[in-house]
Amino acid sequence: MTERIDHPLFLVGMRASGKTSVGRALAKRLGYAFVDLDLLLCEQLGKKIADIVAQEGWEGFRAHEARILREACAPRTVIATGGGVILRADNREFILRSGRSYYLKAEPEILIRRLMGNPNLAQRPRLNSTADADQTEKAYHPGQEIRETLEQRAALYEQAAHAVIDADKAIDALVETIAGHFHATPSPR
Image 1 (cartoon, rainbow, N blue to C red):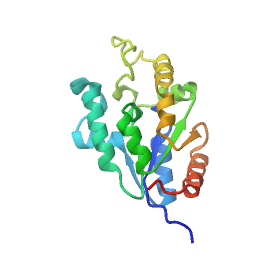
Image 2: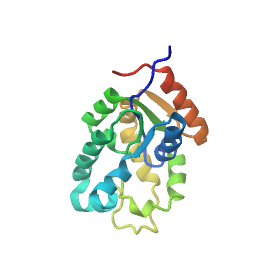
Image 3: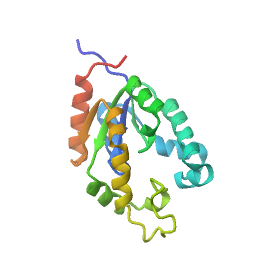
């Protein structure tokens, strides 16, 4: 008899790594609910991420993010986390003990290409303080910022994941890879 898998599944990784796109398709494939933490946070607060960060700073945003992470955690749910959720050790521990987590790992060039094609780029705050705050959104190119941020976070993504998945594949291939691993891995509880 096959063990029924009910625990949540978390996707971690950088902005533009595919967490939302893969998460939606994966949830459909598994028959799970889907939650995008960034979208849920914005809905609950009635503000864009950039506005929350501008008003409350990154610390305020991260506190809301940690609360939403715990509220969203439910059986049979795929959760696309925000790119910085792994910055807090308590979030990494929570993700690891609450379900199965997968790091969608992408090279900086892939992330940059995806971000530059994203119409929501202007709605996102800078990822780190080294970015030139005086740049206009039209002139903004995320290349250096992505490389620096990925270098700072890569080990944390790996710490928060049960498996690392190469995100430079088609969504269908990523879904099948994650679903296969998910079903082959025993429950964390």
